[in-house]
Length: 115
Length: 113
Image (cartoon, rainbow over all chains, first blue to last red; front, side, top):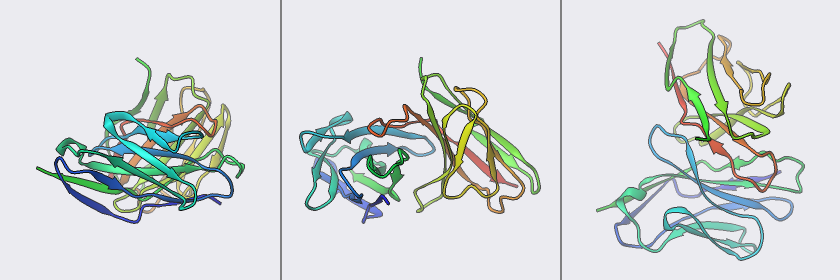
């Protein structure tokens, strides 16, 4: 079975400071990992994904994420936060060895960037 | 312009009524999904479909029904059997392979009045 956890319901950061949104996962084999962002009353937008290769993945809007197999983590990062980054962020995992292509989503983390 | 379209954006349902939420995609994606989003609970899978004329129940299928008569369309019906239907509903599609991301519609907010 595949699962993903986002341990923080909310993350607060000042504009210009680095931000991290945490995600840990559990799968039987090597995971496929995704980050999405959701603005109020909108659908989710894809940010980035890890499939294989370099552990540091770069995505849209200056976001990046680091895959850490030993810690089973895939934290989302950005060197300098913007107020416009304030949104709900979802981590998702697929287990290609688990027989299902359906992604499992975390509960979401609300990122608030203060001016 | 390729994408996935949900309609309506807002929907109000009276007690005992069935309502149907529309989801259309022109991305030529094989797989389509319906999720329900409630505050603090993330996304919960209602139904999914890998190919035309085939669909599978997700984690919370009770009180919902779907059809997949065309590749482009995956409508969701919220029946009167769904006791707590007020929520934000999201439709998504993907190529159906594990390494591809999902594309989401803008959502339909359903409210029982």
